[in-house]
Length: 480
Image (cartoon, rainbow, N blue to C red):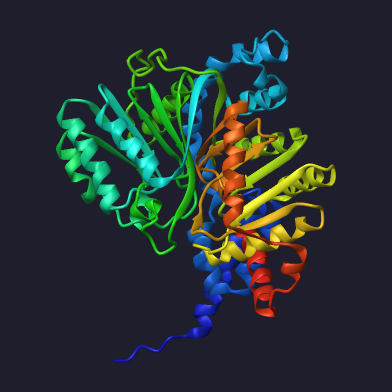
């Protein structure tokens, strides 16, 4: 017996659901007005599509309920940093190296908004090539003596992913504490699953799966952190997978990560502890074996800054803005996705208009076309102010960096887009150190050799089809 479908009833149901979601967007979620208008447009102009998109990307009204426990846990950091904050604002704080003094305001802002403790005895090594970075990470894992803590958005079930898991499993069999935290959606998209980690768990290692809800695109743990024996820490843009070695469809993979030794590793360790507790429920002791005194320290000043839907403000974005506002000579930015809000756009525009050399580099080949066309649109708004934009032609650019005046900057997991600023859990290292700043600036200038500049003249010659794609992509970019 055939069952007839009453399409008028289906349309009525979708219209009713979209109306309910519209009320939630306007009255309960307290969204950015631009994002709210974009959602309302999708819900009413594309009823069935809007319904599905809202289920996947929306529902921010549950955010406070979902992450209030995590926010309370993170507050244990507060007491550790109050003394340093008081010393800084009362001008009683001694900077061990003069490189950090000009950035006192930035340091105080991040300390107050994110409890980002400033350590001044760090040594920083920069990695811009995946093979070199992962060779170093694997060596550090193999030489570990007590514990290994890894936290990554994506761990692929491929050659590199299996090599990392095997190295971790070997250390677990030797009796070391091995903990691996990964995002459920990120690793599933990369071909990983809990089954792929059986070698590690069978050897005695532990895994934590962050936010197992697979149908929610928002609120993912996008951080990339590794802490070895509490003495060395990695942070940056690299996930774990063959494509990050340049073996994927996008070709050579240009990214940035740093290896830190010094007291900033303690903050990375705390970040892992808090995320592990939220994910698994296990509280790790704040024992000195996890927080040993540095043995290979340097003179770099570093703050580890964390952002996410559990933070009241957007500390990483605000750190970016403070750095831009402090610039006297240059601001160099690399990002795969450039979808900033008005505050970031205003900061970049004012810096360029004041004579600062502002340069922004994005990839020439997109991994997400929608985001790529939106990024071009936002860049175009800055060209007339004197900002110079570049498309990286030698593979794919995935680095998330800023360097200011060759003296200070940031490296981490946070892209220059609304998703990293508001919806994902991110972690960046902010540094105040001339030697690191000069090296970061040198890396940027070397990349310029394989870039095409997006000049106003070149941009004006784009086709009507590209103009249309940019317009549509920009229109829907606030949905993130």
